[in-house]
Amino acid sequence: MRTEPHPGDGRKLLLHITGDWRARLQRERDRRAGTLDAAIRDVFTPEERQQLRACVPLLSRLTAHLTGD
Image 1 (cartoon, rainbow, N blue to C red):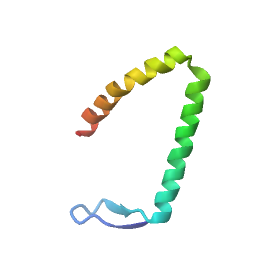
Image 2: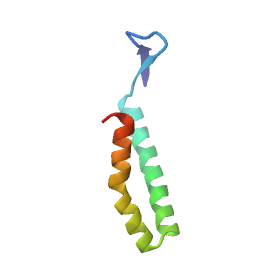
Image 3: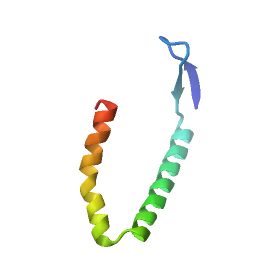
Image 4: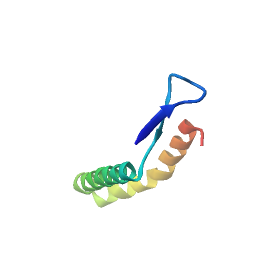
C-alpha cells in the first residue's frame, strides 16, 4: 500500500492498495463473512433466517440512500 497527498485537499491522503494488500483485505472480508454466517446459523431459526433474507433489499436501499448511490 502506498499513499500520496490529495491534489485538492492537503489534509487528505490517497491510498493505493497493492495486490498483496488487496489479497489481505479479501482474506479479512472472507473471515468476517464466515464468522457472521456461522453466528446467523447458530443463533437464528430457519424461519428467522428467512426473515433476515427478506430484509436484505430494505437494507440495500437504506445503504444506497446513505451513500448517495
